[in-house]
Length: 165
Ligand code: FE
Image 1: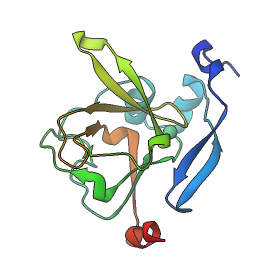
Image 2 (image 1 turned 180 degrees about the vertical axis):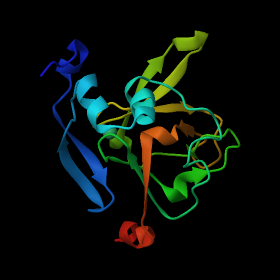
Image 3 (image 1 turned 180 degrees about the horizontal axis):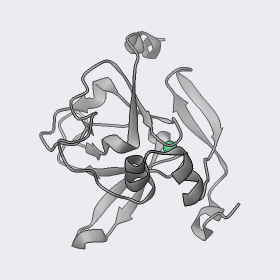
Image 4 (image 1 turned 135 degrees about the horizontal axis):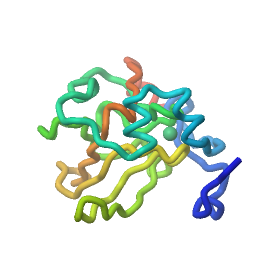
């Protein structure tokens, strides 16, 4: 397997929070080549999640998703956001005040387009999810501005019950 150089220092197994288990679980990081991802992802998801693209605002199917459930990584299935963290930012992209757990995402400084932004990535497979900004609502003040193409929504009517346990 051809692991990029900067990845060699990172552990191959990490702990992430699982909604289903309501606990931290150890998972192997998903490391695949672009060719491998291309075979299993839709063209939209490949372009956004693997090539750091941005979908057009108000076009993503999850922007208006209001049901109770979990937003998972479209590439690897890692739990990323729960519905109660979602808010209407008016930007046209699905927006959240916080991830499921700090372990489930990671961050990188993004200097593209003459801006300094904080890129949000899936901690398991390094999918590009979007960016996080400091102009979100309380209590976190964060706005996780995500691409629908990097997420899949799974309705989970008993989500609050699971998280209560
Ligand atoms: Fe992922």
